[in-house]
Image (cartoon, rainbow, N blue to C red; front, side, top):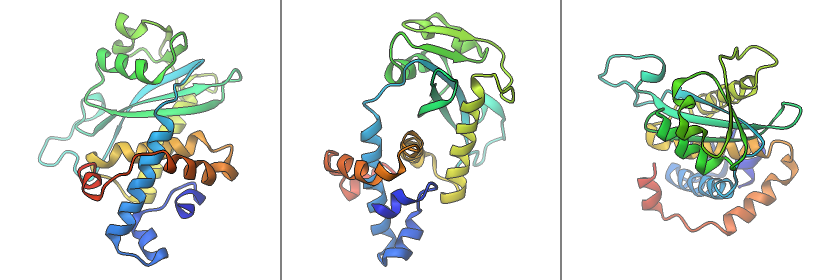
Amino acid sequence: IYLATVSKRGISAKELQRQISVTYKTAWYILKRIRAAMTNADETYQLEGIVTIDEACFSGKDDDEGKPKKRGRGSSKSKVIIAVSLNDKGFPQYAKMEVVPNFKAKTIEKFAQKNIEKGSTISTDGFKAYQAQCVKKNYFHEFKKMNPNDNDSNLRWLHIVISNAKAFILGTFHGLAKLDLQSYLDEFCYRCNRRNIPHLTFDKLINSILVTSPVGYYSAVDMG
């Protein structure tokens, strides 16, 4: 557990296998249970205040196999909605990421209701799905065409978080299958949301593991 928390970049099952001299399956299963606790720790919390939302496509080992390559929102890569809350000075606080089947308005509405506290201000770009009435229910909503490189843009920090998440997955795990992606995004968000208290991360993770339901090996295999 300590090895899984001490590095900002996380640890792969192959590296954990090497460091503690166990089989790959054992190392993989240990990390699967740790990630389940990370998911459990964050899923009950909602973002609040000013919350930026955007969408991104994450490539994986099994993307686009035998299919024509597409770009943008029509890509067959894994589709992910990302939300980042900002403090009153415009700096990022907490993040949520969720793998979704599409970027339609109803899907975005469902994500918002699950992850963002009612009454918050949602800031997005001008993508049509964000402008639908169902998305604007229960929230103050501001949308406009934004330049992510603009230091005054609310989306600037969100795009940095997306970039860091992709670097985390490619750098530590060298790409993932679609089935695995959500638990690794949960791990990234767990680390991101506790980046200002690194000295407490180990103790907090231990507490989360104690209150997380056991994950059997074969159910973990089913989960990827």
